[in-house]
Image 1 (spheres, rainbow, N blue to C red):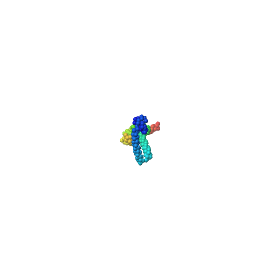
Image 2: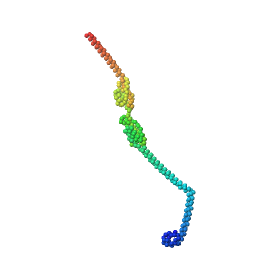
Image 3: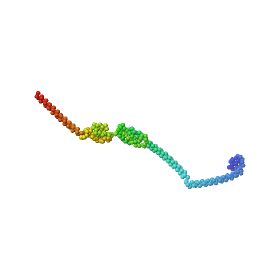
Image 4: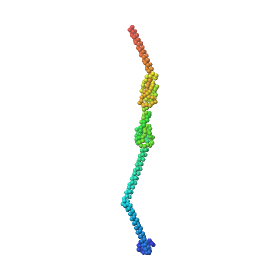
Length: 282
């Protein structure tokens, strides 16, 4: 194919004139033919070189590994890596979920608010603690106030504070104080001593002891020391003096009375006899 240098129109190789502008290119045609031959030779050389290169490449590839093995191994390795990657992704997501659940449960278990149970009965207080998932133990404290009996007077952890699940709260419950203080009644009369013991709520028993130097009907001894606390069921024995001198005086007085009675009876009998004699004479 000849290209016209004047109008750049393509013409046949054997054309002498341009079919478009009529330009005469006989000499150029010969030159072009020579150039075309040279170009064809170059192209043939390049094609030959590329063919030899491709043949050597193909031989090397055949010597290394067969083609069918490469095509089979690549998909297997890619599928395995994808499965392994998916496994690690799912494992990491599962661990994250488990860690978040455990963390939330730990927060709930260690963030329990202690309720205020002071002033409630023991039964009401334990019900409140059970609702809050807390444990408890009972501690008793004696009180003289009957209104505090069975009531929670103190709790070991402050109300509103935070603690963990099943934490033990100690409840101090009031019980009636059954102890009484023994008063000092030695030296008192029996009447004074019994009044003092009754006022103090102390039970007592009375024993008498014959004495010579002690004042009669006076407490000379008590079985439990004064100012000691005892159970209200215990009994204090008080010893009361009984003076022997008073008994001897009573005995002499009784003898005098009997002698006087004898004298009076004798005088009365004499009078009766005299009256009877007068009646006989008349």
